[in-house]
Image 1 (cartoon, rainbow, N blue to C red):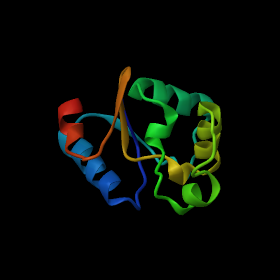
Image 2: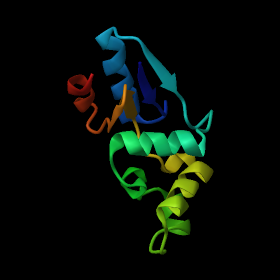
Image 3: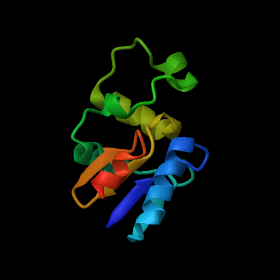
Length: 113
């Protein structure tokens, strides 16, 4: 099953969603700003991406700059920051079985699925 962690207000996320729609494959849309993900789910996504949590943080967001930038943070602290402020999570993220990618640029999704 394909899943997309999607923010409808983000242009890149909308472009990624359009690629999935055009693929005619079945997929699930997870609007993570409306229905926040659990810590376990976020950790699973990070594991499938095969990266450290800091690599999916949107470091240019005001929330990050004002509250977290320059601080000594553990991976758990970073995950908790993303849970408290889901806007910090990079998007779109596409999961396909046991793998995942960040769809930036969105065209990478075509090769992934």
